[in-house]
Length: 463
Ligand code: NDP
Image (tube, rainbow, N blue to C red; front, side):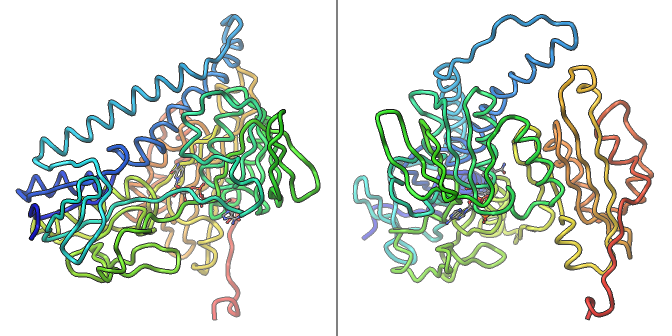
């Protein structure tokens, strides 16, 4: 006998789960949501939002320096880590509260508990043992950072879960990994005043991004005095009374106050009762779903990072919304995972949508590249060594824009807007026909007249 009956039980109050709960409740469904940590999930509590706040904090350093070229005399500046951590905590608490309010106002009930699946339509709350019978269960449990590579001394390291709340600012920081999280934190902590060493196994950072963005970002990170070490990993970490000794694969040793491991994330599928209910997972532990986010069980759906499709907040939000529309709004909806824009909040920032040059050249017979690489107006007066890179990837046969890649100030903002025409299948001639907005950096996107390169596949390569 169930202790309660609901139409929808959502496990996890992160971006995807919260949206699904709110929309489903808005359609009149009886909804219960279980969250074991804090409402808001990774994005709000220990991901995108606090990260962006730290990015803002870090960029004041450049602003102070640049101001002098414009006539300002800035006195001695100093940075106070506890003030930043406390300000961040206040903001994420406010946002977490808002997420909760949105759900409860819509009529959903939130319970602070871990929940496990008992069978295809029953969930058990671990805090009080209650069993909840649900017509539908939505798994939106997100992911967690991995601790890899497995080396002696790994217990002395931290992940992105801990870095936002360190009691003491790490003056010497070693970062392991070359992905989103690693480059963003390298950028943040270098500007906040830490000596940063970043080690990663690949030949460059950000595997999968356009190669021109990667190489230009690496130059900018080195200019910011980040010690980037490609093709190198830690082999063991020792704790001494002077801090951590990080022994690297090239035989060198770096001293650090903290070691941040940012070598990827895994879906949170352990100990959820998935096997009992018959929910299928893939070799990476992610829940396998169809285009409507339905698992191998008709009454159980999953959205967001736990499905490891595209692990970005807006994607999880869309998937959660589409699920609620489909099941409770009688509007079957799927989410397109094509042309999803993304940003990397390094300084300079990356904003990107669509295919990289390398991806396009694998798929299309003829690929045209348009490039702009220039010093922004502000840097001419501040004296900062800074370059903006813009790249447009075009199908040479049809003139369709396949991808746009930007490195520079506000690249994320530009990528969001340019994702609209790219998603609509616009042509390069549409870019050319658009009037420039002067003086901006973005005007370069519509004033690239000369093709920088054309790559044609030979008949043998096409076969
Ligand atoms: P990423 O997948 O971006 O990068 C993982 C890094 O770790 C890569 O450099 C990878 O190397 C390396 N790596 C993986 N396994 C090992 C191993 N066993 N030993 C050594 N190195 C290893 O993961 P992140 O942790 O940086 O971020 C996780 C996800 O979070 C991202 O994929 C993204 O979806 C999301 N995110 C998005 C942000 C944004 O939108 N701005 C910001 C932060 C996170 P290699 O390249 O050689 O595979």
